[in-house]
Length: 124
Image (tube, rainbow, N blue to C red):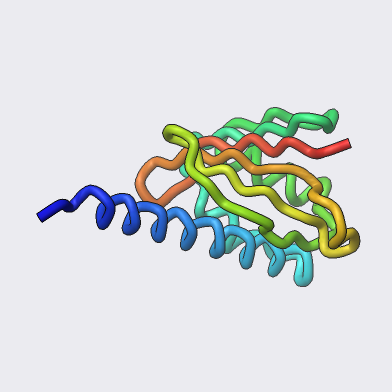
């Protein structure tokens, strides 16, 4: 009995669920202004970095919450693809207002069910 592929499938399934919930909660925040459901997915000492933007980095859930309160995003996202690279989950995404081009990628490291570190790289 070979458990390797089954274990990998379960892990990728969990990663997909984390990304799907993060995107749903992000888009909910864009629509309603309430990013609370998304923010609780970040660990208390999480780090959020943006590459290609002149904001951040933000360290700690409170700092990340303040950033979303002070400069809320105004466009929803859709995930294009998800893959695992080492300990990171990498998701390419598109802005809803520009569905024909990849807008960037999110690189996420987790600590159990929470996001420990996220690096968002925006395409030019």
